[in-house]
Length: 443
Image 1 (tube, rainbow, N blue to C red):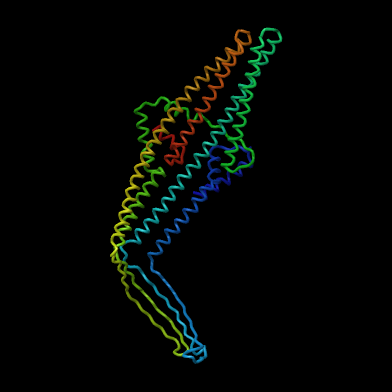
Image 2 (cartoon, helix red, strand yellow):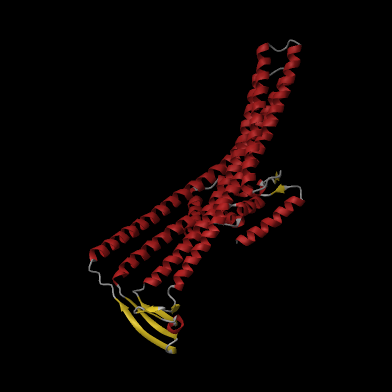
């Protein structure tokens, strides 16, 4: 998966350099994955855990050992000797295999496998966490850009209002108080525009740090028409349909959620550790399958010897209270892991309910804020026309303009909030395919 991501990101980076430096959401996700140092660390952790698992497997295989020795003497019983005449050397080779140890090796092998799988689940959770972070950063940048556009439009309205106010003031048709209010309104909206520029720069900087690109780029806009049918459905979803949708998502989360899977693995690990503690009463039996030696001495020349046999080592637990204490402690750890799994289930259920309710609420907000914006635009047009005809005051125009920008910002927040809620559900279910996520809602 990592090689694929890196290759894809290389192609994308090359494409960005050759094109108009426009980044899509999918490209931002891939670049964030390739730039993630946390994922790189998890990759190393997985490789290290696989090596630990392999070492445990090797310990179950026959043990092969070789040795070499050599010696010479120059003094014996206070008599000096020729060292060459006393030269003695030997070479040994032996193969030993554990025959029985109460199944400890198999349990330890299972524990190593569980540890490796647990690290993989942690890496999977981080994988979707990076994608979720990329989505949120991308949406935040687009939201800030849309808010800046709305602030610019509102400022232009305030500038137009001020220009009309200046004409009226010059002709004596506007009092000083209304003129000062028009000035204040223009300055306020200019300050809001400047704050929107700052927010956009800040969000672009966060996205740039996440995806690892230093040069300037533009963001591809989101096609909200793709989500229109889903928004309409979720905004008017019934309680029965919501319950069906919850059950559908829960079935997916129960099988694929990384946090719940890690809790299940921790439960299995605690069970294995308890079983391993109970094996402390079992003896260990090993056999020397083959042993041979080759020796040479200056006095006797070459010689060979070979042997094979079985050695039995029994552990008689006289201090049985220590073993019993160890078993009881493992039982407590097992029970604690079982409670942790139940807590993980409850937390995940709550998180799923919260995410779905947030998705429903955001969909409803999109529709209501869309209608509000439509009414606010017509209201501003009406007030602006009356303002030109001197039938509305500066306060009336300011209130209508404020209503418009509030409605526009509400729609912007609801639209991108809806997308962020979808991203959260995708992370909870470890759903890598966005089309599959859409199908889950619409099945």
